[in-house]
Structure formats: C-alpha cells, structure tokens
Length: 91
Image 1 (cartoon, one colour):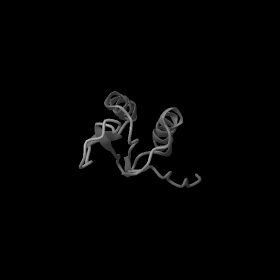
Image 2 (cartoon, helix red, strand yellow):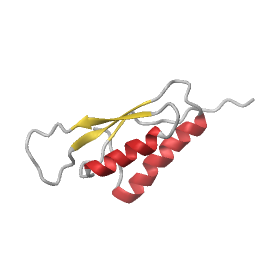
Image 3 (cartoon, helix red, strand yellow):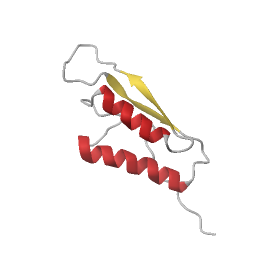
Image 4 (cartoon, one colour):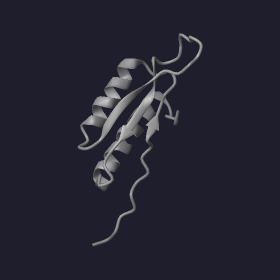
C-alpha cells in the first residue's frame, strides 16, 4: 500500500469583501465533509468600511486522521469559491 502525502489545508481563510451569506454557504459546504468544522471569525477592522465583509474569515478544523479524499474535497470547495470570488487569503 502506497503512502500518500497529506494535502495542505489552510486553517484560516478569508475573502475580505465576501458577504455574510456566502460565508455561511461556504461553511455549510465544508460541514458536509465528515469531520470538518468551519467557524466564522469576527471582523477585526478598527474602522467601519462599508465594502468590508461582516466576517473576518473562517477557522477550519479537522481530525488528524482526515483521509486524503476528504482533504481533497475541502480543497475543491475552497477552490470553487476562489474561482467565483477571487483568491482567499489567510487572515
């Protein structure tokens, strides 16, 4: 049996101008992957900016034993939203 290298999944992601509803949609999609949790982070901007998201980003967590297929699914979900809304970044 061949050993597979674990994929690199970010632990925090954000899209600075993404609406709250889309963050909720991403979190719901990620929650469909068994063992993966996505928690919304609060906005930390010190000054109000109408164009900033109401959310500071997503905190992702998963067990160390998450299989490579599930890891690939998480990355596919993040890539899908990156293609629609631009590249995510780490907060």
